[in-house]
Length: 322
Image (cartoon, rainbow, N blue to C red):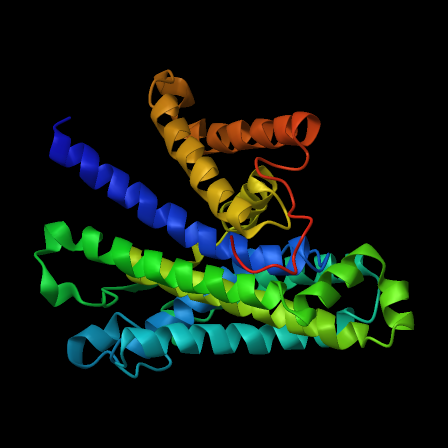
């Protein structure tokens, strides 16, 4: 492979790792700092992608409308798509959290698993909403007019990097504020925090909504990178499990660790694809499952030998960023 091809491949890898780093940062707010168990990341992934896609694409017309069924299409800018994805995911998080956050934390885990799969099946079965199992194609890409199509990934890498850095800085600031210290206090001892006069339900709800809105942004970034989405992308294994592994690998409760974990695990995930290419022909059909098996083995190794992750949790949160 020539140098240009290697660079293009590394750029593509960095884009996907950056998108998954956004998801890991959102999960870190919920799990790493507050102790909320969200097993429904794939649902927010799905909603963020579809909402942004429908906001930024025009309504199908003419002959094209016979093949693409879409509830709405506003043809609005990319930034509006990101904001819309975050807003809708925040509303869904509130609807999930309101009946579950007053109960034991395992109810949230159960609810998010069910809601995520329900959302995926809604988009899959309701053809009038977003073209059913065929999904949406030809999604607009921001600033595509600046360069030739074959060089566009360099532009999108900058966009993803800027969004990721902005989210990282925002989380760092709020986590090192009194609000963030309350979240960690709730995670460590919920009853002591309540005795200190803190509204536990309110802080949990804020954490759930904030993290879910970030996940919605990640879904939107993914949709505009791939330019095509369908319900079969947002499965629990690809949309939830691998993101949990990223956070645990990097270090729960550490934003730098969440980003590093996303890049490391995505590199291993991509490397696993190359390894499965050498499988015998009879096992080629099982290659995706073997890739997940490799990631599961990695998770077991992390839990046994490095349970705190590559970077571990930061013990001091009052100081600002190093």
